[in-house]
Amino acid sequence: MGQGGYIFAEWDSIQKEYPDFQRAFADLETKAIRSCTDKWFPKLTPEQAFGALTPNSDQFGRTTILPALFDDNAGNPMDTTHGGGSPAGTWRQKFTTKGHQMILQGNR
Image 1: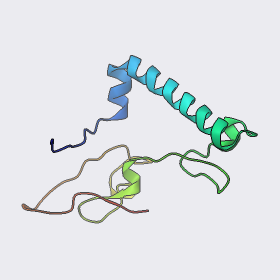
Image 2: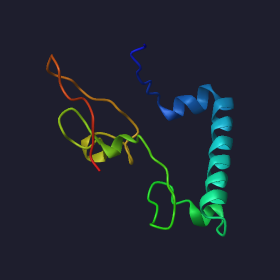
Image 3: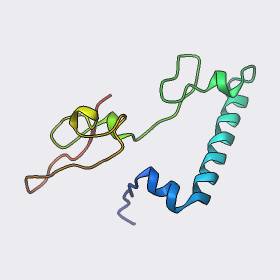
């Protein structure tokens, strides 16, 4: 069995280098939102049913791996206060110690 893993890429570079991927991803997102609306909220429009990152109790939403929703290796939120964007658009961290350590954890 493989070890698994993740690849993190900056969204701007994906948009610039792979415009076909960007268009396919946008189309897939639209189809997924419509499908969820049709199945879960047939009397609503996608705009009414989809709450994006902050859905209400009568909506569905999406998950995210935005850096601002995580704490870095020092336990600080990866947000504007700690060197990111708004919301943070980078996963950059400075590691100053060797050895086993937590590198990322959720903060919400």
